[in-house]
Image (tube, rainbow, N blue to C red):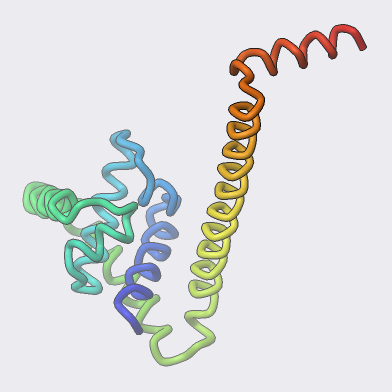
Amino acid sequence: MSAGLSIALVQIAACDLMGARLATLTGPSKTAPACRARRRAVWLVREITGAGWGEIGEHFGGRDQSTVWAGYRRVEAERAADSEVDAELNALADAIRGRVDAGAGTAASTEPLLTRVAALQEGIVAFQAASLTVLRRLDDVAAEMARLDTPPGAVDRDFQARRAAA
């Protein structure tokens, strides 16, 4: 199993077990619940895969390796201070290891996780394509407005006038 794939598998398994969304783990949210889930997922990924800080950061929304490392250390401090947190994280890690390791030998047991990873990747590609289409269209409109030497608000006023007349 490649390191990138195992990180993705651990992320998805962590989401399932923690009741979080992958978008929460990889997104920009700085709410306390999102940050806590993200830090714990980072800790789980590091403990299970042993991946480097930079690589983990790439899988968590392009975060810097120092940010990832700081989150990991914070979880380590929480584990040291609270035995319940330590037990919960160890149980999550064991459960994820069981899911990922059980699938290492058979394609059938990893198929649901791989299907979800593939679906997420397809969704990302579709979103990127749609975004590029919108950006190209905006560029076309801006170029046409520049060609016509039309002030930006003039198009809206013209549209509203035609709409009122209809």
